[in-house]
View (cartoon, rainbow, N blue to C red):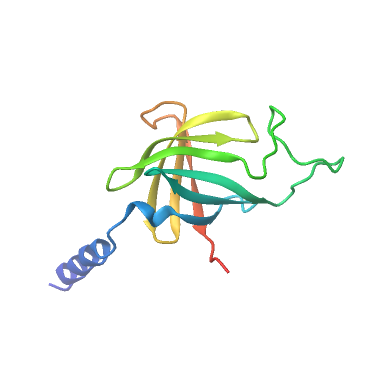
Length: 138
């Protein structure tokens, strides 16, 4: 009986937070803790821009760039994510260190934690997942 009660409470607690499309909007700390990404909405799609990097300049004092020579700071690295009622799908994620673009999807664990999956195939099979943490705005 006690285990049934615990199971029921667990089910109730997971259903209390219904996700909304704008839940990912805000400032996020990437898993490696060396960059902040601002996620924003534009025309019902979601995008992410680099707003801070730990080392904004290279050894010569020039702005840090991707392999194509584009400045990383203020770069839009997430594009065209669409909310399907449960997760954000059909977007792309650009890896500025490698200079490669991947298919992307996002799931939220709770209001302050998201899982960003970048993959080489649209099915999300071959790729990797990062955990990002929401930052409080001041």
